[in-house]
Image (tube, rainbow, N blue to C red; front, side):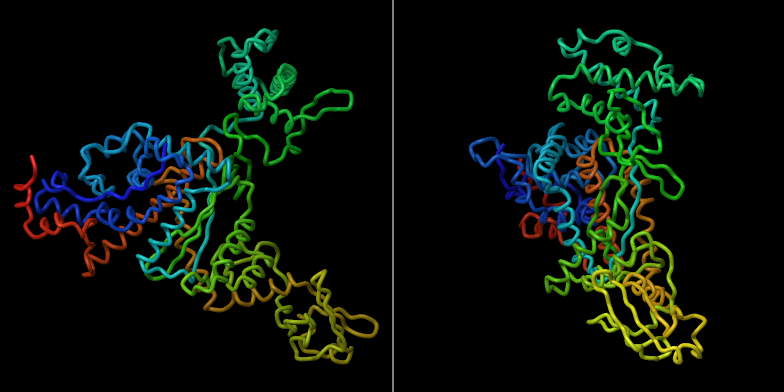
Length: 567
């Protein structure tokens, strides 16, 4: 299938909108479809996706990429299934108008259009590591941000747990499902099927599943059943041919045994203690990328999403996002975001500059505060991860270049001072006379020695103390309060966009769907912003095809124009 850009989007005399009455057409122009057609569809970068298709121009051309990508956005905006969206595209003039297809005799969609495009994107990312959906969603976010007039100088961030839609399984259930799945897969291979004997063949028989996975087992029987399942898994492993890990059912069986069992020197396999099994161990028989994490007293199996918003009085736009296994910490997200924003700050474009990044305490540490400063921005957080330090440390005057302590909070200069750059520690000695009678002695961190008083603190303690001091100011608290807006995003993604019910497995596939939901949120914010401006007396949106003479005639003559419609 050859790549071809969708360059033909003009109206003709058979356009379906020409049969609308004036009132219907004005209603269409005031709907989300007009804003989408004007502000989103023309700016989808089709060339970005050319890598998904053949360079042989003699082959059949692709379904227009801007049409397909726009469909995926609309699907999430309207919360439709693929099947429902298919029908809507065929019969809904509003959606056709948003997609610039009202003049087509037949809509360029089949029941496989979306699934084929998804598979191409999945395969490309698995092969190259490049997430085309993320890149395009972020690029459109920049367009939406400019259209809404939202400055990027202040950004805020939040994360949410994205649980896998399959039921949480106990260790016993996980073993049972994986062993049964591997036996079924082995039975499809003639050579292996002959070797399935004894208890392994029992997995092929229809039975009361609740008995097999322990619903009716007594507590004292669970351990015995788990031991049996492990032994069956080990026996099955011995039957697997070389290269078996290429098949999903066998791959998860091998991983299960690697993570959940120990093998002694004499070859005896035993179950690991539950506490010794890592959080990154297999959590589902079908979702290999899901991990385990406890947060705020709740157990989660799946992923964690991170959302970065640009915000000001004109609104907010999600300018970046990420999805990762849920063992990924907020501190790691913070480092990644600061690094990316720092690169943009260094580009020299003032419109791309981030001055303030607002987070909650889980994102902030002495290290991330320092990283933010190096990137040319301020990291604002109500608290910092970890324990507070002595606030008096922030009152010591420290030379920014040499790291030497210049004076104590009382203004006394040290008799000697040094800085260990490798260890990141400051050390200063003060005379006994200066410290013994100091009025700040009770709060000072100095320690008395035989001939002097000594002060020692690390870079991290200094940064933390300075951050604690900033947090006491009114200006700082105003910035902290600005983060409240992004805290509702997890609820929106769960309630309105079903982020915990994404119907695919694996990180790459889930991130695709997560990205389209983020894109849909941004589009809806743009539509709401433009509608508010119109209601406030601002300029109304221009027609999506404002350069076309048919639209100009339509606007001039209203419902008279359908009289000239071609037969």
